[in-house]
Image (cartoon, rainbow, N blue to C red; front, side, top):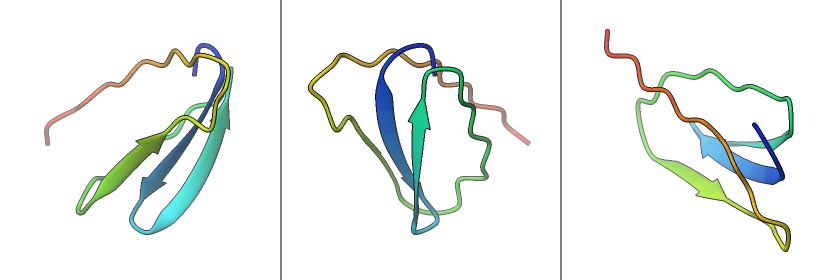
Length: 50
């Protein structure tokens, strides 16, 4: 996370990330990225193939 707050749902669990946080997970199902606002959010998303 570069700036702001985002909630990421992966594997049925909600993770709240703030600036400086990092989340690593295997995506086997659905995911959701949600900005609870009102401030803007900036984040980096990296995808690594097996």
